[in-house]
Image 1 (tube, rainbow, N blue to C red):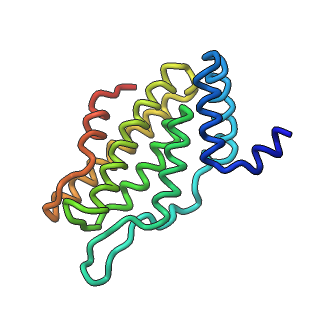
Image 2 (tube, rainbow, N blue to C red):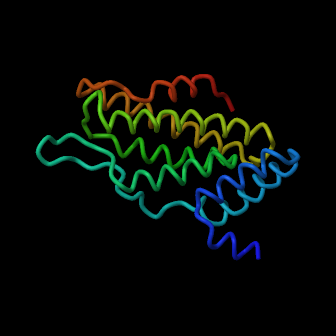
Length: 184
């Protein structure tokens, strides 16, 4: 009967049930839930995307960029990964998203700036998740972790340089500051 309910209940109700269950039971349940989520995400979501879907698009009349519908799907995947404690996997996707902004232009306020501010916050959260992942001993290859950290760092530096070239405001200040404080 539980499977029938899970298959048919609206997602928002299922989220409410899971939140209540995790909040009202022992911390062991939350730990088991997160462990099971990581196992599932490792099988399904942590596999590299063959190609990043289109996450930004240019308006033909203004040549300014805006988020494309594919951005929401990729960010949901990113958030599921770092939320389950798989920050390093999420940083890989976030670096690809940031690289997708290279060569684009946008206004300092508006939907694109708002989307980039969310991505900045996501990078900061993914860095924290990565730190915890390492501290908890779930990273067996520190060289790979260092490579992921170096990649996001170089990507942010490239973004800052690209944006400075056209006089825009660098939208990833918090992420860059978080990286400065992160040593592996």
